[in-house]
Image 1 (cartoon, helix red, strand yellow):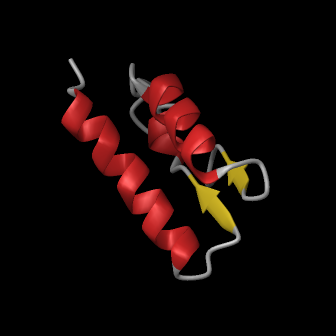
Image 2 (image 1 turned 90 degrees about the horizontal axis):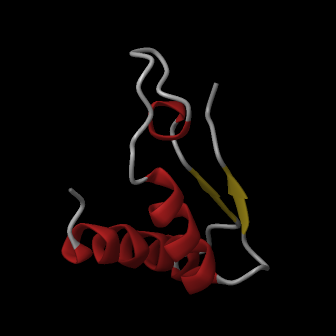
Image 3 (image 1 turned 135 degrees about the horizontal axis):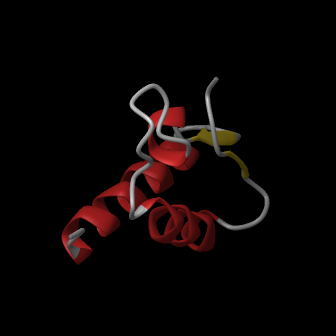
Length: 66
């Protein structure tokens, strides 16, 4: 089970990247699609939604890398 601390850590990292000039946040395919192991992260949607809420709609989110 994903803890609130782990979720807040993902949010904090995304906010820091934006503060340093990132225009896009990209989640790895292993998180969103489970590539190459075939099992996506069960907490991915919560993490993506929390990051999107924290960084705002001006920053693009890409949900996979390949």
